[in-house]
Structure formats: structure tokens, C-alpha cells
Image (cartoon, rainbow, N blue to C red; front, side):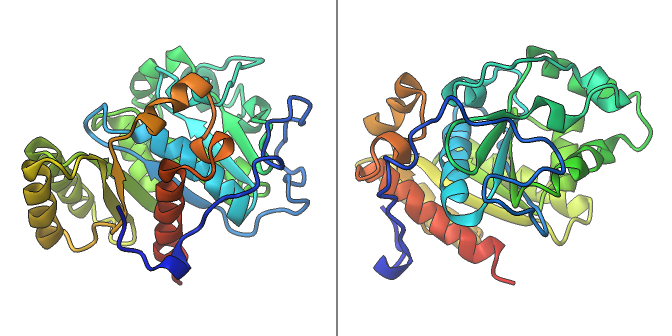
Length: 290
């Protein structure tokens, strides 16, 4: 499933410590994070794909969980109005804020942060009104920079901000690309998915975002299919930055939404948990290599 050497793989084996705690407090901006110290330089990592149904939310939730376990205070912002990450992490917003209120400054992101109950992992829940984010962004000055400016209120608390993005290319997704340090792209081994990756790479290049790391990997892989073998081999030749780790099509992963928890939290020794741990280990080598 992965070409990573054994010494670079991480197996999360502490489910007792990572059991959700419903009494865990909500963190406010400027407070000490769950680790007891403030973050120095927050990394912004977006999980996105122009296409839907590629395992994007599953990736975001599991990687954010593993990040929280290894890299300090972590926040997952669910930007998809469908709210799949919010549902999976059992995030029931205490208060709701529309994009209009967020962009006008009437509400601030730290006011909306929820504890997931997992150490070091907090959640900014989605709201169905996020479907109108583009419309309200278009009304603001410098609309492609708004999300980056809003995230500054989180930098004193969190080491890493994950963005779980809605599919498509939009003004909101352009905000995400401008704000992020790295873009993680789950990619199905199909011709249309590869075409999407070309479009995304061209879009990033046309905007001159040379410091933005594009980190695609293959998701929902079935190595029994000859087409998957062929597309994976050809794509790796075309895109040398493809990550080595491949996430297989797995019933273990499908059960995640039934359990409403990250896979390493409820089945840390299963194959799917080990694959996501290997993926996170590989990503850490890329994102924090400097």
C-alpha cells in the first residue's frame, strides 16, 4: 500500500488517551492551546479536489487527528456547507455564523471553535450558509485575501490549521489556495481525476503561487484493477510530486462515518489506520522539510 520505509511509518497506539472528552473546553484566541503553549508559526494545510467523492473529508479528519497527536494544537475548519467533517467529529455548533457576519467582522472565528474531545484537536464547524460564501466574498475588497486575514486570529493558539474544502474552483477555493502552505489532493486513479490535477496545477501556476506545495496522492485504490495500475504508473511519471502512500478502497474507511470518529481513534491497529499514519508521516517530511 505504501513505499515508505518502515522506520518512517507511524502507528498510533494510544486509543485510551484519545477517547473524546465531552467536558473538554472550547479554546479562545489568545488562550493557551491544549498543549499548554502558544503556537509559533501556524501552518495552513488544505485538503481539496475539484471533484467530489474522492475521500477528501475522510482524509482531512484522519490527518488532522494524527497531526494533533504528533504536532501540537490543531484546528480543522470545515468549509464545505454539507458539513461532513463536522458530522464525523460530532460537532454540534453552539452558535452559528454566516459568511456575511464573518467577513464583516461581526463574528470572529475563535468564538466558534469547538473542542472535539480529542487532545489537541479542535473544530470550526461548517454551516449550510457557507454555500453563499462566494457571493459575500465578491462584495469585499481584495476578496481573494479574506480567508488568510481571518485565519490570523488563530495563529497564537494553533500549530496547524486544516481546511476541509468543498469541491470545485470558486472564489472561496481561490482564497484557500492563496492562504495555504500546502494543498493535499486525494486523487482517484481515473482519467478525469488526472485531468483535474492538471487543471489545478495550471491554475496555481497561472497565479504565480510558486511557494505553494501541491501534494497529491492516490485514494480509493483497487490494485486488482488493471486500469488503476496503468493510470497510477502513468501519473507518477507525469507528476513526480505524487506521494508514495496510496489509500485503498476499504470497508474500514467506510465505517468511519458510522462510528463518527477518526479511524486511528477507534481502530488504531487496523490496516486503514496504518495507511493514514504512513500518509501523515510522508506529509510531515514534505511540509516541514525546511
